[in-house]
Length: 140
Image (tube, rainbow, N blue to C red; front, side, top):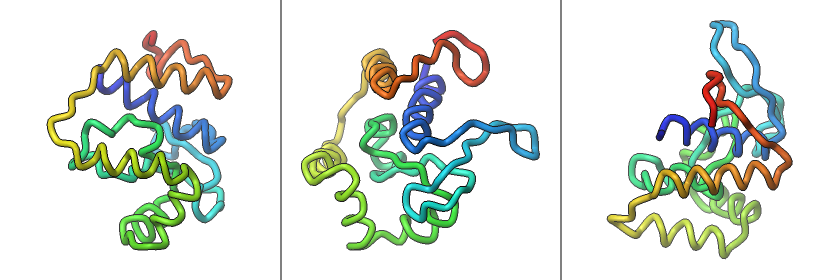
């Protein structure tokens, strides 16, 4: 179920960025579109605000990820600082950023995979996307 949640969360992330799924040179699937930071068209990555390793309960939260190109993800976002914090606050607002920070400091929080799945499907539906199958053709 968790791999399928990642598929849904990535659809939310990349649909929000108006990216398109493409076949890469190696035959895999990737997402191509405008980086939400530099605005250049590139292959995009699922970039988390609060780290997945430290905050696994926020991994699928739509406020906790953005679509960034490799360069912006590793050479700008991971450096952190006031500029990245101001940028994310400008995108999601102070209240939602503060909620993420509070949730990140909350230990022992468990996510309900079915509740997360329903939340992600609702988010996609609000964007006008109704996925019936994941990227490997399995029913959602």
